[in-house]
Length: 177
Image (cartoon, rainbow, N blue to C red):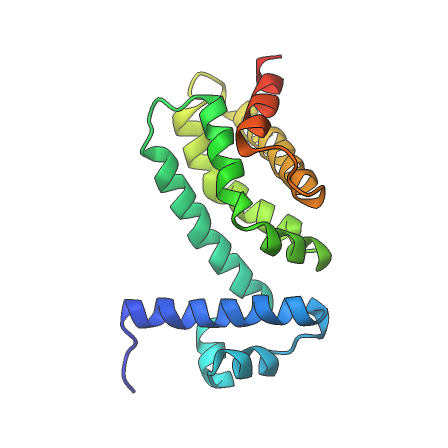
């Protein structure tokens, strides 16, 4: 059997992820079968199962990849302020608003949020809160990220009337208090 190259594997994963998202726009997440996903992606069920163990695994692997990309982008700005961080967060997810609404509809928003929290923990502790005791960092991370993600969801559900800059100004003001 020919081993997949890294780019081929990434393309395969992108195809399967895209198939799942397209299907989520057409029908309820819980009614989507592996066969539906494989057929839409143009792959066999065997290929699907070599790559993923479940529908949730598709999402988790995608969120892991996206969270790592976000983390790398933010690490490129070592002196980032809370305002800049929040602005980047809202601008980053603004492009993914339809995905977020699909996840909310399928009761999978928390899956995304928890995957991001676990991926961003090192970034959070390394860049922002080195001066705090280790035990409080986990609580701070969950408090801040929970607030950010739920504010993001509220913003998207309400039609994104504010710009990412306005959201960053608003949310960063909460951090100052």
